[in-house]
Amino acid sequence: MSTKLNRLTPEEERVIVYKGTEVPFSGEYEEFFEPGIYVCRRCDAPLYRSDDKFDAHCGWPSFDDEIKGAVKRVPDPDGERTEIECANCGAHLGHVFIGEGFTPKDTRHCVNSISMKFIPKKK
Image 1 (cartoon, one colour):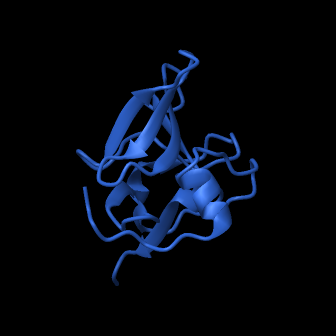
Image 2 (cartoon, helix red, strand yellow; image 1 turned 90 degrees about the horizontal axis):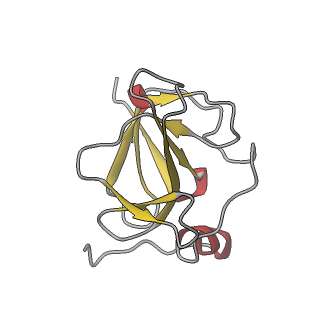
Image 3 (tube, rainbow, N blue to C red; image 1 turned 180 degrees about the horizontal axis):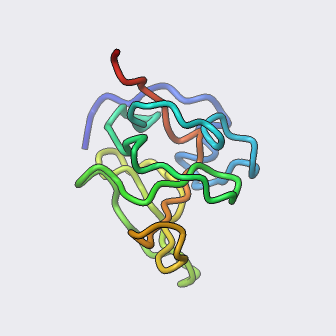
């Protein structure tokens, strides 16, 4: 686990630390498709590539793959869903769903925009 953690706003802390969810269709990356990578807002660890992002029309940014080793999957206490966390610092990212058929990889990481920061690809 990284020892350097970024300071969070109260709303970022509500989602990232206390496993909240941002309001659907409100996040800054929900309809954002620029080339680059998405990193954890809490520790800056790389999480997702823009090449793996797709529009699932679900209200949150969706990815069908993560950067290898970047995301940890944890069963939700309700037994219904699987939570995804930053493998480096444990920040709550959202949930992963399998078998919906949105992409050939058949995986959807449904991620809170507030849990990430975007780093544009250098030109």
